[in-house]
Length: 266
Image (tube, rainbow, N blue to C red; front, side):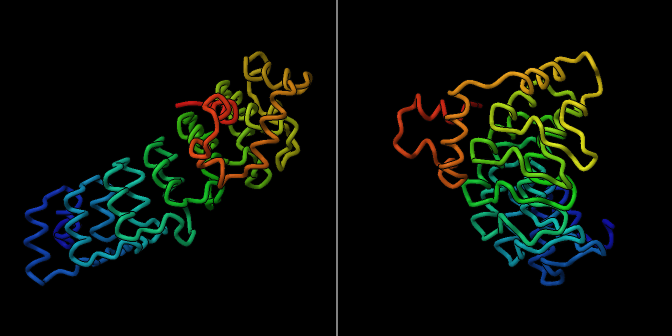
């Protein structure tokens, strides 16, 4: 591949001088694609080379071209976790909600727990509950990988704990992984402890160990009513909705109210 696609090689390895020489010679297309529709910009972003990506964009690289899997350069940058690179792409018109094939930039950021990139995407309008063709919503991804920080960002932005992928909620995934802290976080934010998946199983029934703290926690939530404070918080969060929750700290509310409604912190 390196011999056949020299521009891709330079972008992938961060060889900015070589990249400039190749592109400015006029003999190479800045958007030239491999047989998997990978462009030089994809390579630069996946490897986190800010200078190469900036040069490619300034010389005609199409920021929203997708590879054969539907991943755009923004998806690759979010996978890498370079926040400056993500900002660069957004400044050049990268779509935060590209036409869905297999994944989205938000899913890629969560998969690697690059929560700072996720914050940036949400600030630019990324859909917090958009499903991909594999995991489900970004919160499903966070639950599967056990990425608490990304989950906190999503929940603060109003992500739903009860959106399902084939009747499988994030709480089912966290319970299956016996992730006590993640289960607790989801329950505190309104996850339905009685929800059943496509096999008719509740989250507690998916916990592998019969003696785990995770199973005990779920049993407690099934049998013990929560406080009025808990239900008030959920009601207010539901009334505000994701658009207002995303900017909760900018609504002019006292900090103690903001902390009460978020109920999480980085």
